[in-house]
Length: 363
Image (cartoon, rainbow, N blue to C red; front, side):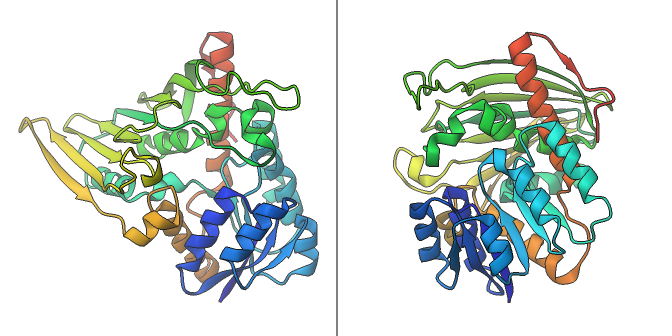
């Protein structure tokens, strides 16, 4: 039984607990969060766990095998610096940190550390994305030349202390939310980004909200174009005020032979009929001028366990195997750095109204 110490017991922390409960040979046995309500909800889900007020209390007083960080974004860097002083594996929620400067510090601190650190890029493990990656590996599109990602979804949900309403705590929407998409683009195109151009705005969400005199400043819609070193390109179409869309995410990869589309519904609780829907995968074959469509099923218990279409469970399966058998994380600190770098550049580009050159800014 692998024992997890969870730091950060909010909405995502509770999703992690529900999915770890399904693994069978793992359990969350310690939970740290300063918010009494969230800590109590997590302890009700992880019934064998002991609660702690702070991460330091958990580290000093609990006997766990791995650490799982699901605290607010701006706390990641400091928590990781503390946890890296231990010899235990770490799974840290995205983004790795809110700035590339903090990411670089973490990369430097991790040099020579033997225990693995895995950055939680759940979107890689959604069944329709896994089906897409399989098709690409089999040469379905030829060499991918373009990746187009559309996410039209509900606004950011309320969080403890409203931390997700401010760029200073999240890194900005194009870091906090979209690090998943920069990671997917880089994974699919097998190249590093060299240039980013973004147009974004704060047009609908949170405009009338005030928090201790602070006005939310996170963008709620954007178009972003990313150029890659091998001549390929990616585009993101983001809208955070489109709840009820049939497909929450739509990922299209196009090459000389075909286009492959992974179409992912949002959580059932945000659908107009509150009913779960299956993902779909479509291959549009250029030479035959036809498409092949298939359903990509996700077990119902995984849809109930979280809002990420089963990906949290499948990621935990692979992380647990790494902990048990050894090896290299599938999502590394370097991957985490690149996803923050592109998001940070997109935020800068949207403010400046010009493209941002990433040459020489890799880890």
